[in-house]
Image (tube, rainbow, N blue to C red):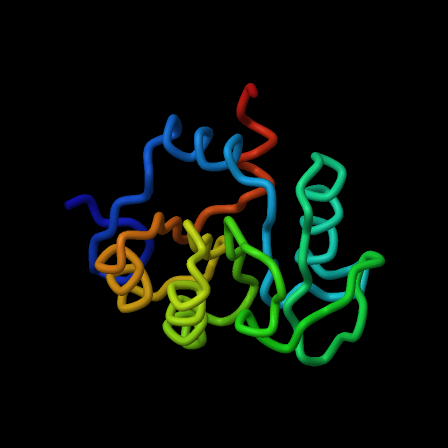
Length: 146
């Protein structure tokens, strides 16, 4: 298995075609760590995803509303079906977030650039969900042709 990142362990992200298919077939993205601060990458990427037609659900216990949407304290509080869980949290938090994503029936967990957790990646794979790690959903989306 190829080795990515600086962890010394390997993981394999989906192919560009699989990522394109995931992004094209998804409608609802829960963004864990979405911030109301326009200086934060999560805010700008959340806004971009909204502009692309996705329903973006903020998941952040420190926010009541972000980008005009109610924010939820955790994934299990989100009242609708989530396609992708996009994670803007430290790698140490990824296992718990992935476990919640599995529990709510999300079809994918996307760990943003710099968010690396081999245990979370393996957990998601074992549960049969699509795992993307250390990749930027904005860069991937803006680089595909629908």
